[in-house]
Image (tube, rainbow over all chains, first blue to last red; front, side):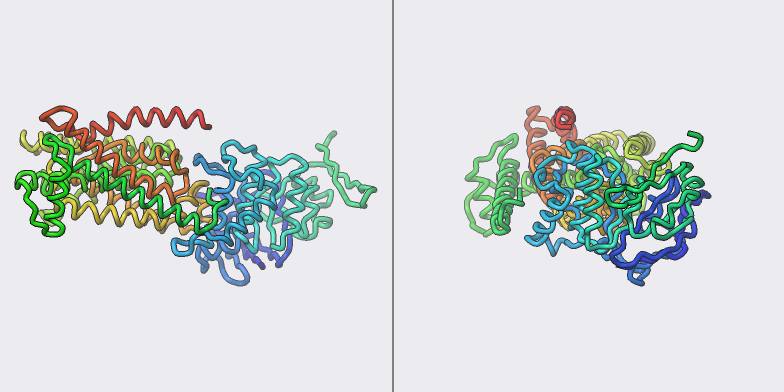
Length: 255
Length: 346
């Protein structure tokens, strides 16, 4: 699914959180958002999903402005995994993943056999199929993250937005999640903190103080000067002799 | 769970649940008609029903017939409608504001309805155009608006909402007391205070004709939006990203709650704890999903309030204890138990 942001912005009171961001995401692409804390990545993601009131600029989905689509239409195309998901309800893992079917169901079109298959597939994809009856409250941070991703997959979106999905995961689950996301036949917009992981994206956008300061293939975008000015780190490019992949080693300046 | 059963089996299971629920409700209604200061034998009740429903022409003592048909049956039906309506209001508010303590009583909606009803009764607000129920509806809507605005101004959190609800309740209860103290004569004041504590004594058929449709409509709205209420589990923003038209759903559901609460308060006064305790109790029985929680809570609320009404008639011989007192006597310890059990589960 093609997504286009035209001069998108959002302000709360007099504070501009995101301003004048424009870019295009092509179908099938994995598009990464990086930037320091508070640079506006999360807000930008929520703007792109149409979840914030009174945005400026326009977001177009396959050429249609988001504002002309109903919430249900949007949810049938875009699934969002936010950083924090909390509930006090005693929901089971399966209950949470079944929520993903919400945009496809109504009082007249109840949950059916096909929905059950989709939910089972989603649980299988994130490796949570053996824990379907576990309560949300008893899950670890990483398990919760995987369940939320399964919920998003159960939405069968054409565009998946993830806000720092590897945050609570151990290294194995981080890598397997990124592989899972990369192999999905959908367009992905993903906010990431780990710059080495961001190297796996097709293109990266760099956010700084609410503005997009660079956008392009990871190798071009992540140069030493930019990493020094925006992330305030000294970066050294290293080459893994095993597969010739580029990795960064970071140090605080002055070390 | 549903995932291991075939669709046909789950449909049969649902049918069984509905049949059991209906049977339970009918039994409770029957109990409400039979039990009272003059206990009436089942045969008399059956004969009286047959006479009224099918013109059977059976011999029934006219006094017994009057007690059954004009007094106990409408009273029991209104108790059922009120219990269901209040429990549903609790389910909706707890889902929408994501606070376990949300119910029409604690959020000030009942207090607002009471103030509105009293304003119409004593001051004649609305010049006769506005019935007591209309006054209660406006009062309830006003109270909800005041509480919601106060909560938003205080930062919009879940705790703020409960605190705003307490402030709203106090304000509207004070307004009610002020109106009564200022304008009511002694007899009016006594009657109003008794009514405000919750009282089904004066209930007749016209009240049934108001309460029953309101509850049925409210129930259908809640059932229609059951999936939407599930989607609120992870908050408003998550509901929106799941395709819920948040504002529309909130308006419909809060409208239904206001309508139900206002109607019940105008008929029987403000009855606490039903809206709070019943939904929590039912979550333990049928789980948190609203497709089951909504019907289960409606049924449990109806049965509970019928039983509470029977208790209010029987507790002290020759005297009626306000039903609000009975529900609080049962509800407060029940709620304490739920809190403690809830803690252990987490």
